[in-house]
Image 1 (spheres, rainbow, N blue to C red):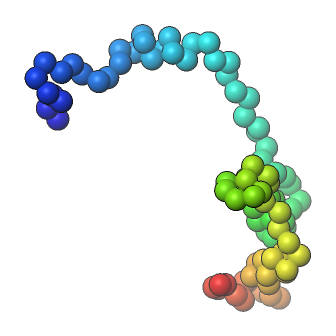
Image 2: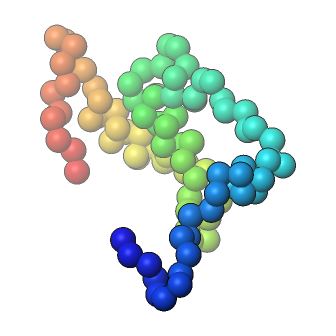
Length: 94
C-alpha cells in the first residue's frame, strides 16, 4: 500500500523496538495436560471438562467458569451415547 500522506513514514516498528517492549515480561508456563486430556474419561466427561474450562465472557457471571447443569449433561450423554456396536445412534442434536 502507499503512504498515508505526504511525507508519512512506515508504521512498522523496527524489530529492536518490539523486543524492548516485551523484554521485561516473564515467560508464561502453559499447562501440559488439559482437564479434558486426562486418561480414563469417557467422551461425555471430556466434553463436559472442556465446557467447564471455558470462562463466561459477559453478563452478571462474567469471569466465572461455565458450569454444565444436570439437564445439559443428560442431553450430552444422549448425544454421545454408544449403541451395542460402539456406534453413535444420534447424528445431529439441537
